[in-house]
Amino acid sequence: MTAGNKEIEPIDKGWNELAALVDTLGENGLGLTGSGRWAVKDHLFHIAAWELSLLALLDGADRRTAMGVPGVAEDTDSLNEAIWLAHRDESPARAAEFLRESHAALMRRLTSMSDADLRRSYNHYQPNDPRDPGDDRPVVDWVGGNTYEHYVEHIGWINQLIKESSVSR
Image 1 (tube, helix red, strand yellow):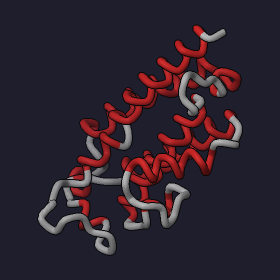
Image 2: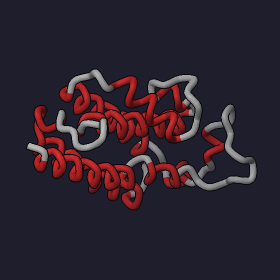
Image 3: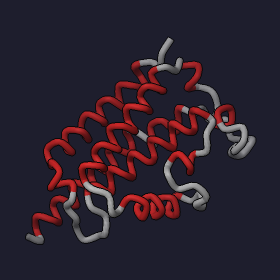
């Protein structure tokens, strides 16, 4: 049995919204920057890296290596900075391609999992890098945070960046 629609549907809905925004912007729009140092494309690399982190979690692999930032401190700010540094000079077209590739790989994995698989703990999937032994939350708790909840967050930031960019023209 594959992961239930209950888990896949919000991912698909959020993904469709993000993909539509990327398509609407086109390659030139992916290069837009606002008041910060991140361009739209940097948000795409960031989302993709965190999806790869989730995929590694589910595969029992090293999450930071999957993100392309092995050895970086595990705190979110350090990881996000390292992801930005690793990809900041890459093209907008590569950002869109990387996002689509990462998402496709993650979805292949998620749709192969049963609901019971998604109810297993983080530590079940990461025995070599366990969290607090008393933390037996199901791995599905990481799915939303690294997919549809993450998309919504970044869609908001991308839209703000677009707004700032158009004001500065």
